[in-house]
Each structure stands twice: as C-alpha cells, then as structure tokens.
Image 1 (cartoon, rainbow, N blue to C red):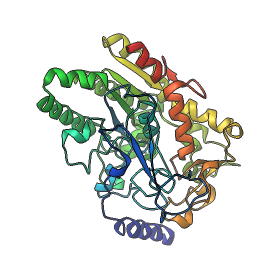
Image 2 (tube, rainbow, N blue to C red; image 1 turned 90 degrees about the horizontal axis):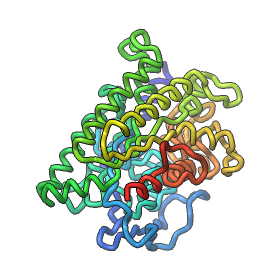
Image 3 (cartoon, helix red, strand yellow; image 1 turned 45 degrees about the horizontal axis):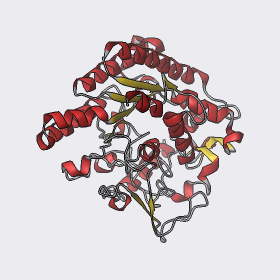
Length: 405
C-alpha cells in the first residue's frame, strides 16, 4: 500500500511540475523549402547515444520533391508526437529523459528517447516531421504536409486507457481527420481536396491499449464475454468499419500497423516474474492472433474497396526478428528497459533522467512498453522497403507507391 501511494505521489509531482503544454518545435521544419532543420541544444542533457549535429544543419529528405502530398497519422503512444501534452492525463512524455536523443534533445511528447517510426517514414517520403493536431493554430498552411492525431492511451475501444485520464479516442481521431478534410475542401475546393487526400498516405497504429488497459485487466468482465480469439475478431471488425469510413472520405493509401510483442515488454516481464527475460507466451499469443485477423481483413478490404491501396505491417514479426537476432542488430539489452525501476526496469515507469541508462542505442526497450529510437528506425525501414525483414503485406510502402504511380 505504501509503495502504491509513493508511486501515485511521484506521478502527480512529475505531471503537474511539467504542466505547460509544448508546441512541436517549429525549427524542425520549413514548409517552403521542404527541409528539416536539426537544432543541437548545447545545454541539453548529454547522452552517448545521441548523434552529434552542427548547431543548425539541414537534413534534406531523400529525393528532390515529396513522394506524396502529406502523411496523416492516427494511433496511440507508439506514434503520439505531442497531442497528450495538452490533455489532463498520466500518459504524457513531456518531461526528461523523454526526447533526450531527439533532434532537439528536448521532450516533445514522443514516448521514446528519440524519433518514433513516423518520423523516419516522413523522411523516406520526403516530408518534414508531421506536427501534432493539438497545439496548432488550425491554419490550412500548417497542415499541408500532414497532421498527427495520435494520442497515448487511446485504443480501438472508446474507454480503453481511460483510467490514465484524458485521451483522444480512435473514433474521435477519425472525426478530427474529417474536420481537417472539410477545412481542405473549404480552402482548396472539393476537387483539389479529394485529389490531395487520395494521393496522401494515412498511417494507423492502434490497438495495443485494448489489451494493456482493457482485456488483460478484465475491465467489465470482458474475459468472460470474449475468449482471446473472439476479442480479436471484435477489434478487427471495428477497425474494418473505420477504414471504410476513411475510404468514404477519399483516403486511398493506408498503412495499417499490427501490434508489437508486449509479452516481451519489461512491464509484463516484471509482473509475470519472467525467468531470465523470457517473453510471456500467453500474451504474445493474443497479439499474434490479432495480427493474423488484421492481415486477413486487409486482404478482404483490398478486394472490397476499388482503387484502395492498403498494406498491413506485422510489427510483432519485425520486432521478434530484432529480439531473436539482437546481436546482429547491435543490441545487448533485450529484456531490461533503458529507463524505469524494478526488475527489468518494468515496475515503475520512466519519470526522471536519473532512472535512465546512459546509452539507449544498445537497448531494445526504452521504457515499460515502448522501444528505443534504434528499434523504431529498423521497423520504419522495414515498413518502407523491407530493408531488414519482410513484415508488410502484400508489399512494403515503397512498392505500394510505385504500383500506385
């Protein structure tokens, strides 16, 4: 009881001492020149895993022009870049050591030591980093390269993650996208807006909180209502309908991400008292089942929706390749988080720089649930070009854009 009270007090002190919402660093992008500027903050925390940068250097996206007009992102903490900074919630990453190895060496709201997967994908597409929906002025010019609607703790089920406080649900994020689309119609005209949206990429990464904060907690006695397979089918059917709703808003290029192996996450290794860092198979079996259903559903939607281009990327498969071949990828810490407390650093969440390891680049896990930027880079490369392993079906994103062209 005393330890639980201590954790609660630490949560409150950490959140409210950093209650000021942070805008996405404007110095990182320049829409007119389509260049991303990296600012090295000399006063930022030093880290041996951070890459040295000049004080102001352009990072030019590959290619002379963007491959698509924009990148839109819907999801949870795997891709939240700062929306939860503006919400009353425990699910926030607006404090150090989060962001210590990011381009600015400052926390931005990303649940990572550095970049998240969509940051790397934006560069592959020739786009700037995509700004968060909250914290923007709402001007169309600020959204021309895309918008990130993702919110940490959000799930496919509306109430998933609600015990952590406010979040933007999956359905609400899609409504925000619809509002953005209407702004484009009013600003550009309907024909131009339709062409803009249909040629852009929409990236979805959501669903893990429906297990972490709903099914595995047996909220509303859900485990008596659904066996894992039935729960997977329920989530997939909801996702299917929302993808159809996006299609009706002229979205034609979709990347649907599967779920990662949270049975290998430090939190569950600690909770289930894992032996020598072995993954919790019963949890991973649920995740594999969901990904199987989602991959099958993607194939059905490709047949059902004319001119749609949808790929499903199995994050479980890509992540297990990294875990099982960690030495080849340069990782020597596969079970312990870089930041946290307790066995596997999975007991208490990452809340201060003192809780973090010195070098995150040799860790697979950054905190209780989220991978390091090094892992995010590998997974993003796989989504883009299957560089390390095939994990996207029926093809990777690069091939999808070539086929579409």
